[in-house]
Image (cartoon, rainbow over all chains, first blue to last red; front, side, top):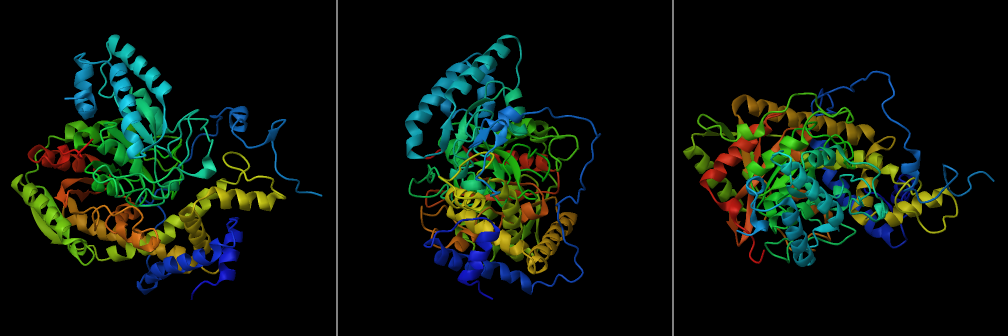
Length: 95
Length: 485
């Protein structure tokens, strides 16, 4: 099943990626080529095979519930595009 | 011998014998980078001030009696390792101006071992590519032929080491991004076992596949670097808490009795026959050193690329959601609302290949497709791991080509990304299974380097370095330098 232009626009929206008008047709073709490559998987018999998420099948380690990190707010905000009074600035979201 | 021709091991002796100081060596290499790198474009940032201050401190530590193997050794980092107060770009416009607020664990560990950081190296944007052509800072050229690609994604690391700008570099490998550029530039490059080297501060592409490792001119130098890079890190939740081997001590072990497997699937259609011959010549050499060889099978190898191009993009689509134009990096001009801010910052900030992979991943993870794509790919991932587990019941080491083809011409595969994806056929399986892999020089075809790949069971980096080192004692492919460098 090939992706249509509208599918690509929907995926781009889900990924919050702005595509220009000029990018859409080429992106559609390339994504269809990649999905064609991926679809070769469907021929593999994987009945009863447990999915493998981590190569060593490790589970998440736990640590003692103690403070290990100190506040780095100033260092982190120093590299932000727009901050004011310790807050990250974005366009107005509530009218 | 000029200073730029020295290996890490030779540099350590030179510094210990006071033939030169770390400061002299650093100044000499910085000057060489200024003169030579414009041909290659391997550096994104040269950290002259940092390098000179680290060199000075290394000289002082040596004067005070310290004598570490890497104390005063010049290196550079792939530009996805966070370096405090130094641009860390991932070769992406979206991280333009991003000076990391902290150091990656790998950077920290190498700095405490006394290495001198000469700069940050070019790469494919977010490590997505096999040619180092997707960088926002422009393509990197292969020093063996400036009209060809150096491989990727650690292409800047490979080109800089191959051209003798630096003796060694860090890289990362998600589907072959250390081993493939090492093969195409006549270097030795090692991807460790998943979890062996900390991923903390290493900007993520596909978290269940990414691993940092060294690129150098020989196995001994890789062993020196790995010894300092690897080890348990509580800051990385997937770091493995297991003691490190002594990689230098492992180098000298004789190969008598080593059982080598040749997977028949690695020698099928798609492989340049001249590369296949070089692999068999390496096998003959290893037999002379006492190894035995048998044919083995990795029947699910052909499914690795499709599975990888689901798993890696899926993880990337999630990892790269953090680049939103709000907290760091690039922000579009005059956003009209929050959605516009996200969409235009990301649309303008990411390059074409990164956008493609984010979209493939977003699609594969979307409602209704998750089982058909992501779960299916993870099931295939287990089949691939099972193939290796079965093979390593019969043999100690697997050997094959690193790449199906020689370095290709710049621009040759740009029109069809899928054709470049296929170049990773022999390297991707190690990432899916999580096992370590090494590429080493094995000769030349048409004046271009050929790499041979060695694969070993989990945590047997020492065995890989051992076999490569023993091979490098009886051959001199790895000492060949590109003409003009």
